[in-house]
Length: 323
Image (cartoon, rainbow, N blue to C red; front, top):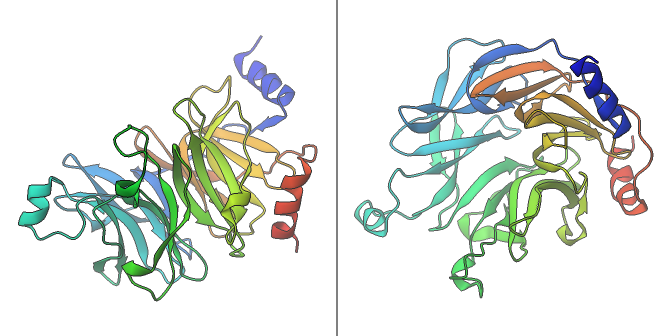
């Protein structure tokens, strides 16, 4: 039997549609591509001379403008509504001696912002601040290891990665840790277009799978898992209408890491193609993603129908997508 037909049968039986191949266009070399608010540009990270740099390219391809390229490592770009670009930056050398010699205020990884050709540091801490995003109201959400020096887990090898937020118009002192769980990792917190829900990737314990979760921004303790427990899923992003999410996923039978799109209320998933780090275009028509160090773009697929998910999921998500 044809191998592709077997794949279709397997995913149909599992309640997961499979998007047919085709329509893929290469953009440029890079990873973690994200569309600008007007959809005309794509920011991404790419290795240059052994270090990570952040670049911006037209959505149609062409020459790259390097936003952050220097002695350290820059990556994980995310656009804000005002056209500025957030990214993570860490110095090439982060020993205590090196930090003292350069009179550093970080000593780890921090969030930076690029706008109008100028870069400025947003967070200041000798910890790890990374994976930023900007909410519609200008709040900067990110993952941090702040507070670990006071943790009872210090020295045990167990690390907590917290979800934190910096309110618009505040300084580094205005950062508040919003969600912290023992022995839990976090990735890519992203606020919905309405500003009501937060989406992020989470892993609990050393043997747990990455999963995509969502919760009200004012009560992250009410997090609900959106992805199956037997799949590994991370790096989620919203569709512009708030009705769908895309993420990196691996289900049993997948050829490797794949791009998935899910309809929120029903939970119906579509496996789009092999790839990682997907992001919707502002009009919701296209996806940008990476595979083997290259950026690609293709039309976003429709999502297959599926039965309703548990009541707690419907209660959380129906209000979000209601017109």
